Image (tube, rainbow, N blue to C red):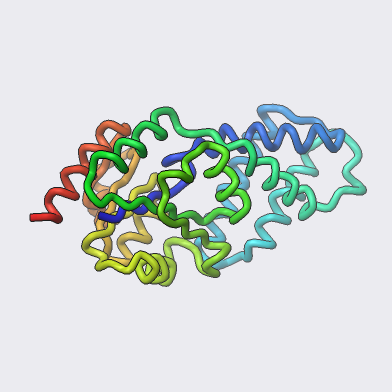
Length: 239
């Protein structure tokens, strides 16, 4: 059974790592940092990733825009700073400061040990050095069979080509694969585009309407619920 997990806000606490890394990088360059700056960065960064998913900007444009925006917000001399250099430092800093979502480590270990033939994959739209570093820094890598990152694949979720590449590397029929993630626009839409089973993790809002819209098979609001969903799904696939 093949469990394909989104990484950020599904297994790793991206926002906690992001906050820590942004503070380190700005401080090291003599710039101000505050909760307000982080919240502004977070909001703008999210809008840029949505544009990337739509194909309206490139990764380089995303990285440059988000840190030019932040530099404009900070107190301090930014005249000598290059947004892409700051972005590289930010990604490197994040890569050694991975933080697991509470309960994620025990959940993955249980899944790997208790479900026969469980294979665990990561499917992320993040930067490679960032994703791989954070996975390793949390010890999550010991349970993972393969990692699919958009920067390496040259295509991002929700594009069905992303999932075609994943399925080719997994080497099993898609009926034995299930996508688990928190994002509707990349994870759930991606699974829908690929005609793959899906679990919406940490759902909110009008859940029933959203599940219908994105053709979502299951939802789970905790790791305990998620384990039960995946165990039952795996058992059904064996019958």
